Image (cartoon, rainbow, N blue to C red):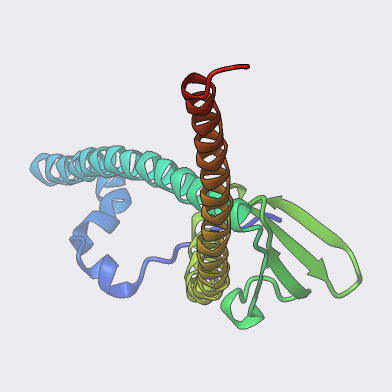
Length: 205
């Protein structure tokens, strides 16, 4: 699925540029054009070109930074979903770019699964989608993820409470066996000591 980006320069953006610049062709082609006027227009052109070069450099840096952030975010989501074994169905209103789909799912492997109306299924890693799509998916996923984590936390909390109480009872049962064993050992030792004393004090016939 390819997403083309089309940018239209609004009129107010054009007005920000000296309108004389757009008449450079007529000026340059005019054999009687003033040299100073030609030089002025050329300077405006190269000034714009220099500014374009600087903006392009910054844009490139932003795109690299954005790509690294997207990779990290998708990795975090994938690990969280995998740990909790989650799959979330996204509301279609949150992902308007999938007009021909009846269901969109982010699964535990971090893949965005598109179930189309014709029954076809498309699946690929979320980080392979355009940044705008990734932003829409994350924006839609976070509220649901919070609810699911809260629900999961309650279930785990109940299990922990059960295991804790069961552990205490089993510990008490174990102590009861230990006490019985110790008492039995002490009685055996007392019997052995009494027998030894009798053998010493009572002469053999």
